[in-house]
Length: 255
Image (cartoon, rainbow, N blue to C red):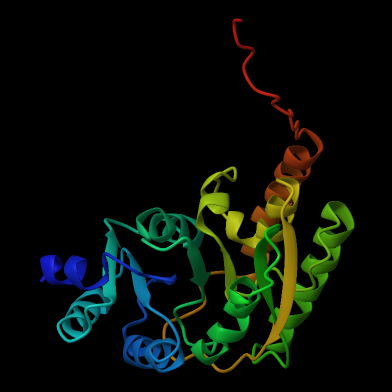
């Protein structure tokens, strides 16, 4: 089966869609079907589902769907390593130079993928564009989660000046090579706009829809997210301030 997958998509893949999944077996079928509906008639693609140590049958369900979908891939972690690790694993294994991510619980509608990707595909696309970040509208989360997120975004924007209203949205599109050159650390997925800007890339934004969760449970509590966020914010602010861009003129030649 793996040989068939490689043969089917080894050549021309425009975009690799990377989705981290942890115990979200109830969301797998809808996710796969909706990604196919969004992209199959538009561009060559692959869908990489990163099974982050699931114990509920998520991996087995993905493998069943792979039997009839040569563009579907599963990469597994031996045990849960977190969302940033899952995204990094998926991007590292991707075959396309353009990456799109979304959450695996169904709250990010795959139908938004073409809109997120389009700025990179336009004939007059900006070569300096590194990242398009989705920003959720009419969020379907609890009031406490929305308020906590709003406060966290305000604090992050104050310290990092990343001009992004909602960095927690899983819907993003970016250049694979640029992403793999970023500093890698746990929870880095929440700081991609600031990290891309740090490297001199332009960051764009697209408002996207949000909906009820299809499966799985939230992996974070408000308190837990706030505690790790303090350390992350300090670290990212330090990285930005310590960035040193050397302009290399080239190696001197002997006459």
